[in-house]
Every structure is written in structure tokens, then in C-alpha cells.
Length: 135
Image 1 (cartoon, rainbow, N blue to C red):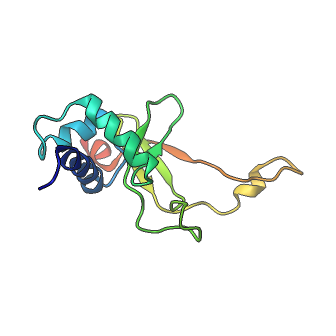
Image 2 (cartoon, one colour):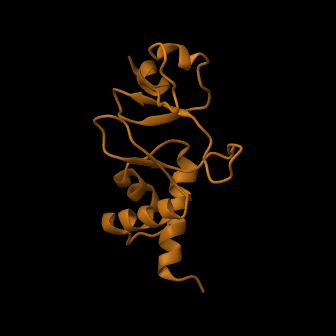
């Protein structure tokens, strides 16, 4: 029989996998309670720490925002320990964050002469499809 901890971990993983986007811990809690009604926010945070340490979830940090989490992409980089590189779209109306699978070419050209870009993050902001339709 599954332990309570395993049910909680599975509920968090399922919430992230089914959402298809980055979620705040409170959003994860709302979705995961469908599987484990007694789940609480401190347990979600504990599970997220463990899952992040185990590379089963990815932490998404956007400037000025609390950390969000997402399921790792099915695509992996050439190095098995690294996750697929992607960017994010942050809806300024509903505050949801969505993955953008793709990367603009020529990022290196944006750096000053003589500089070498070793990594980058790109966040687009605007209205998601749901919020754009609502206006």
C-alpha cells in the first residue's frame, strides 16, 4: 500500500503534469486536493523541495514574482542532468505563466562587443489567449 507521503508526492506531480504550465504552490495545492483532500500548503512546499532536489520538478523564477514550479519538459538537452531550455509567457491579467518552447536566434548579438553569453532567460509579458478573448 502506498504511504501517505507517496500519495502527496504523486498528487503534486499530477497537478503539475496536468496543468501544462508553471504553477504557484497555492495553485498546486488547489489542484492536488482533488487527489488528497487533506493536503495543506506546508506539505506542498515540503514536497516541492524534495521533488526539486530529485530533479522531478523545475523551479521557475521570474523577476518580482514568487517562485513557481513546472514539470520537466519531455525534451532533454544533450546532458541528461539538464532540462530542456525554454522561456516563459507571463499573463499580466490572470498572472498565469506558460512555457514557450523555442528560443530566438542571435541572442549573442545583443551582448556588448567582447562579451560572451553563457546563459539567458526570456520572459514575454502580455495577455494569454483566455484574457485576450475576454477583452
